[in-house]
Image (cartoon, rainbow, N blue to C red; front, side, top):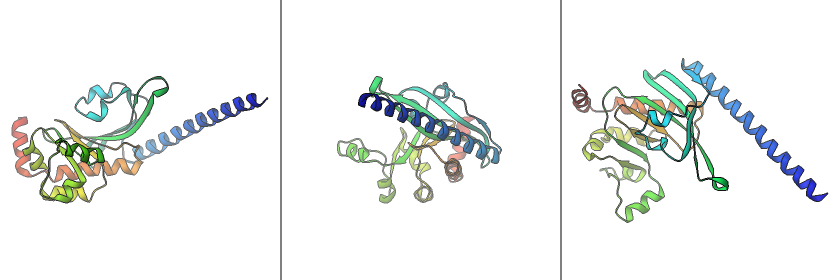
Length: 224
């Protein structure tokens, strides 16, 4: 009898979790769909399993397996070509399998870009520095302590991250940022609220507005 009650309790807990996840997912879809509609964006809740191959330059989209985007919003936001979504990937297998979910925003660039990563510095980054794996440092010790910056071209990093850009990033919500040649991705390891999708778009817009004119002209010449 005791074993039977244990089994029933386990089944009830599992069923409750499934029901909770279903309603939580439904509520999120509705919140994002309503937000997208209010901003004039399209919304597709279904999964896109080719999203990682559409943006091969973004590291966060190439992790693990079973990768797909969902709750996809697209259109024009803050006068830029906008794409926002939730993203899933899995690591491990069997009992060791873990599911990972996060949100992201991708904004198309008005100019040709070079590779660049800007993200909050972590404890593991500080440990890596001790064994010689340094990121790019800047004159502002406060900025260098707060952010991890990486680029194959240090001059490009210094051209983009000038004092006014540092001040803007220091006073903006914290996200991880990566440039590829045509767009910028902004993400965190958690799912965004609707307001945070707009925060991410505003962050990229602010970055574009602060790229120096000489950099814009040089990149347009290269692109032409």
